[in-house]
Image (tube, rainbow, N blue to C red; front, side):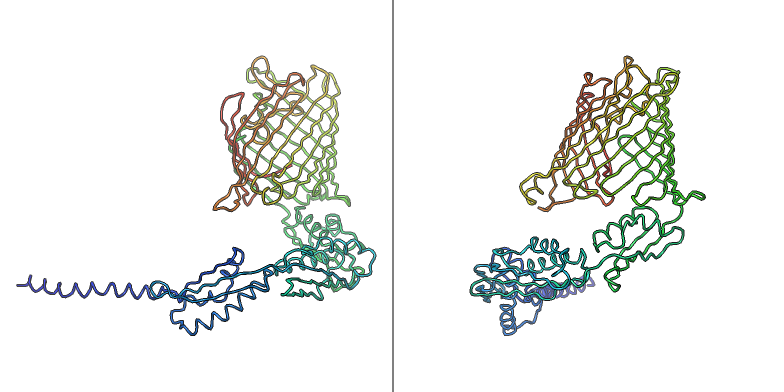
Length: 604
């Protein structure tokens, strides 16, 4: 009896419960149903503009939008669309709007646009007022502004192009001599019937400014002379925003300051406007511990200590310790503050043990001289003492060689951007001459040069981005000396590794001796050609690139004995936040094996 009652109750309950679900679903569908659907028939650029900015789009989600209210919004939308099309240079478009009811009572708003011919620039007038108008020294600046004006006669008029052209002209005015420059008047006179635009802009330069003395804030342990030598801004020079930015960068890169901000006081006398320099000094001492790994040298531990003002001499001391599979090194360098030309005195010492070829080399180096590091050119003049103790794994008697040399080294960088260059070149060279030390002394000359270049492929920026670029590098070295003399192996050459000939280990390419061991040689030649091509994700350029490369190199004691070692492979490049990451899989043709190479950063 109880079972029958329970069954009946369930039968009464289930139909009611089953009917509730469709009712809820219908309510949910009603809430999700838009007030109307917008359909736009127009050229791609116009359709994209209306889809993003048409005011009518805001009302699609209203659930209680009446037909009368929709009709009112459509009338407003027609004027809104006409205004938007004007920003693209279409001032006489034909715009048709209609509402129709589709399936399930959904209203569809159809917008059909026939833009007609675009408005073209008929005439451009650029005028100047203020000091720039009459200053003979500003003639070149006026000509540059006019010559680089981007919206020329015959071009299609758009609001974005008009705004961009004005901003470019203003930047060119205010970045040199006239920081108070402004646009006093601008007019785009549009004739919808002839579809012509007459553009007029007046640039008011204000007074010409010259830089005065530096007003320095934030110094505690350093004197103003150091800041003046690093900034290299001369009172009386014409104001240049580029020079202020370069001075700010030099101060930041010097290591003495955690932050630097350089600006011109435009409230001061234009004839000698104060240059304001706001600084925050770095800590007097800094210790950096590092852990890492590379395919050349395996796991790596490092420690670097900096003392910015050594007591008694006020020079900077930079000491480094490095431990990895191939090298164990400790060294220190003392460098003076820069002079007016950014030259520094420097003395350094280095003690290291490393695997050069198949030989174990313990070396000491002492160096003293002057160096100059700039944005694009580095120079170094120094005298160097080298001592190397070489041990063959099969012998117990070390071979000791010593030398004393005078050297000059430089590097020139002409890249479009760092640390991610896409075009340009770099060239460096070292020239040295000296003598061996010991029982017998013999003169020798050491030469080394290196070069790297990037070439974009394609005819213009759009095709060049898809085709990628060629990256090429080359290195050549020679030690010219009498046969049979003993030179420190650190003065000779080896090849192979991530930045040399890929497919071979670090310093694996050298002179092969009779017992099969590999040692450094007197002559070096390496080269590489690489095709770097951007990788697209979802049709857009990404931060990744694919590469195909060919490397070759040789080391010998005589040029006639050169035998090239070749490596080929593929790889990838990533524009990481800390610099370019290089990942390569290379095949060493001579050793017939694959080798993975990874490297982070760009240096030349």
